[in-house]
Length: 82
Image 1: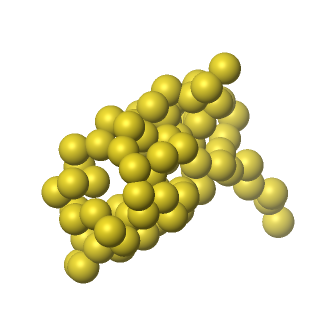
Image 2 (image 1 turned 60 degrees about the horizontal axis):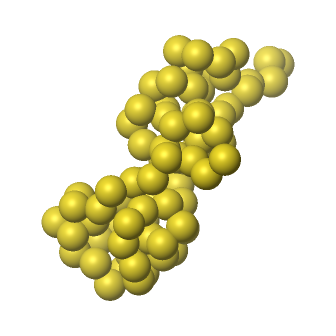
């Protein structure tokens, strides 16, 4: 059996976590075999977002459950804090 190395939330130390960029860079720029992500759902749409609220990693406020899918698409995800 091989132990797989998965990047938590993508390459979140360098790129915005849980973003397509962080997922791609985790595989391209590290020795990770893949990545792990978290998701929520709004109706029939999946939303990849780690936290229940949006404050920590975006310019928005409030809980995911209180936003529409369209509102979630408008959020600006932040670069990781140094």
